[in-house]
Length: 224
Length: 206
Image 1 (cartoon, rainbow over the protein chains, first blue to last red):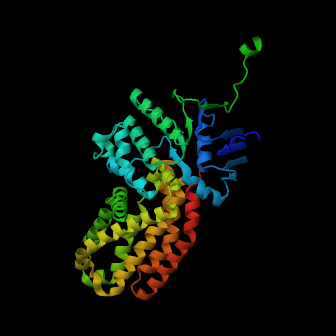
Image 2: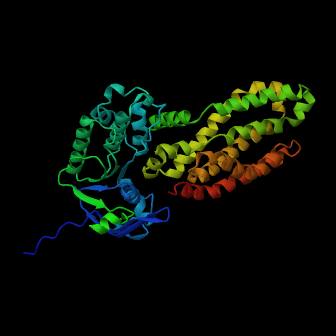
Image 3: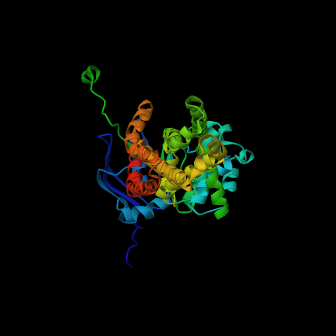
């Protein structure tokens, strides 16, 4: 009997480096991501966590190496047009229009996907049901983050790129975030999370990015 | 689905289109006769120029895509299934529709003060001209997205926009060559069509 082969990775990063403002932020990153996998990015401020996610989202191009999706390089235009439809992007910018209602803020992006009907259940799940018809300017920072998560659920794409998703969330909100991540992985989804705050993700891979500028040695270090 | 999309699109455009630019336009067309005088012969002869200048100023004050970039909406548009150039173009055209509707609402005042509806070419001139102004200002707004300094944005925006709009303004304010206006505006429209893909790629530079 032939030995069973492991499934091919959904996303593969081979020796990837990325520059931002003429500085090498990421160097020689090698990551293999399969289905139902979560990758948690940790590191100091300025170590390139957000740059890593933006590179995966296609906003920046890798300066070296290659990023393969199903074995195809995502930097080629034809592959990227298919690849970007798999992505769900969430960043510190909440993309909330204050003059629209909570429902309209989620529904607009759902309609751009050609879908309809998932906005209201997603908003209910995130605990904003009673604020569904209120203007978005009434929301607090935590409620805005919940609105982003509701949009994430309404669009429902396989690969989630989450940049600091638990910022401004309370304890109940963090549990909700952990719940939706777990449910997303059960469906075969992939999650990339860049965070400073602890998030309990079961069987998550961790990638600690080094500091961009190594600390200079001082006399104290020399004495030691 | 289509009806709901159009309804949402209208709300998106209307919420992001400030009405202050139209009030600026209205203020100009009301105050100008007060300064120059109400001689019908004079206003009738120069009415295109007097209308074009406030229309130009009202469009220059519009930061079309800046709010979308600052709030992160542009990134979500980029990754959506809908085509990003189409979304941006729909925003520009939606803005133009709202703006020109406001001008139509001010039609009685234009007719009363400027004898505006003297010939049918005037309306066609305003329609095409405002569309070209919207598209060109959209290009410059997109090019200016990469500037991070908020204090420098306004001055650089106007410096780059005015030279390209100057031929349009000079020729379209002349009353003797009304037929030539349409050809000139069509030429500007083709210029925009050729530059639009470049606009989209540059506006997304990180």
